[in-house]
Length: 170
Ligand code: NI
Image (tube, rainbow, N blue to C red):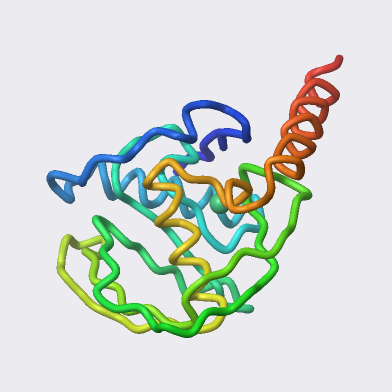
């Protein structure tokens, strides 16, 4: 396994719309393993392939406290979503140190392929529901800060560019 580089907002590649995974083969399973390693190393609860500059519909999630319950979502689709919404604090590995509120469906039903390429369906609520919607946005080229006001977003852009510059300084 190897750790992958996570793109940071406002990198334009984060706005790429992902294509469906054609075959769940060894290449995809390797990518799943590398994404899980990358997500755990960064202490994140979810990671979309878009964030590691691979533009295919693949997501890994682990919202468990024990960090040993990975969900692998390949070509995920929302087959149902609740009318009631929740407003939770969201963060993103591509927008480090920034947290803000985004409206999300309280519950969703997801149909997806797993790491073995088999179709499965599950219902999610709470943090898992929010996380699925956040990661599926990434696959559509959307970062959560795009739900915020343009004023806030511009401030975040400036902060992220400064942070990247500071980190690159020898
Ligand atoms: Ni994210």
